[in-house]
Picture (cartoon, rainbow, N blue to C red):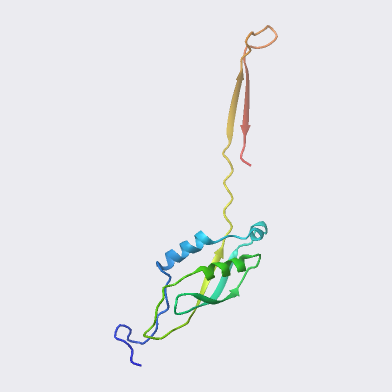
Length: 145
């Protein structure tokens, strides 16, 4: 079979996720569900998944290449199975592509502590007497923990 002019080496190029890497990253970010057990155990890391793409752009034959456990491996597989690429024939051939993707699990940063606050209260009795001063001021300051 002669290579086509637009592809002189006759190399079949692998499919690209619709919208490119930025769209793929956004898809993963918006669909990733961090497993509760991984959050409780403070597990972070990267899960590497091998998968095949058929001629219709469907993900098939997913397999964990490198996992971190605590439900993250299963979540990475779930995400990869949701991926959908464009349907494409390569020079009339039905080609299956073997691909790999890394799914990063990073714990969210804890919220910053509240800023220090000072509360001032002032009590002024309605009828000051000789035994009490006319004004009592109480100041409470909370500090960052």
